[in-house]
Image (cartoon, rainbow, N blue to C red; front, top):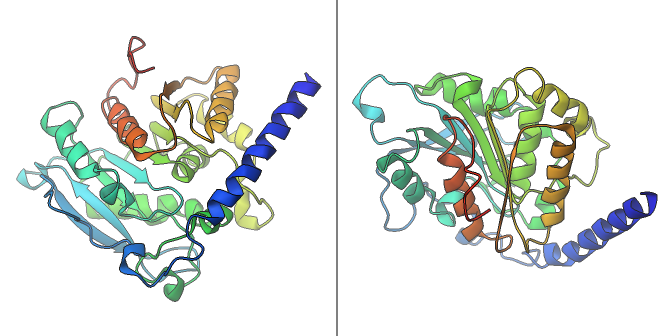
Length: 314
């Protein structure tokens, strides 16, 4: 057993070592003043969403930019009455920002299709920027973050204020159903890691959690804010205690270069008997998978939460 642990730890170290050159190559020499490296408008390209799209600027409770921006999609019938809606919070990964799911994930088209074909309950979709920025100059129109910069700055500061800054703001300004049963959070890669930890730190907030190709570790845990990323086992015990999530989705591609992280986390949850769905697809750490995972999850949230065990894509 001890030898297996050592081999596993060594294998993980090798994966991280192999990952670092890729991170360095992901944009350390880019021209950060180029418009392509800013988040840009909330609606991009020719596709016009059926739902309304709003840009919301909100103060950050942690020292940093005076105002952040999140993109809010309202379902097509939002303007027709006084109905209240569940909310899905969708997080980007490294090298991402609040429009990543719009630019690369076809999220408006996917969401319109899910709702119009009645495959999903109508919901409000919220896409915040969860990068760490020092101040307004550093933020600079939601500037692009290199992968290495993104990974090394995961310190819990933005995440610890997520409920106060993002969720409470949405509940104040839109007709939401402001309770755990009507909230979901999901994200890809680092966004998957943040979804795991935000839901674990605030177990009363989200009944549905999705981690798409997630990282499941952080590199440094020394600063006070990093308590957010400590003690996960104890936090999971509370989260999956008397009122566990109705849907907890862990998804990864078989050839994803950090697939071992999802696999290990699945085994951790399985060993403890924590109810969750582990979905293993073909392919790697790519948008075609994350779009599929989003569609798969959204057909189940705010319902019974289960994934069909006969699904041929498992």
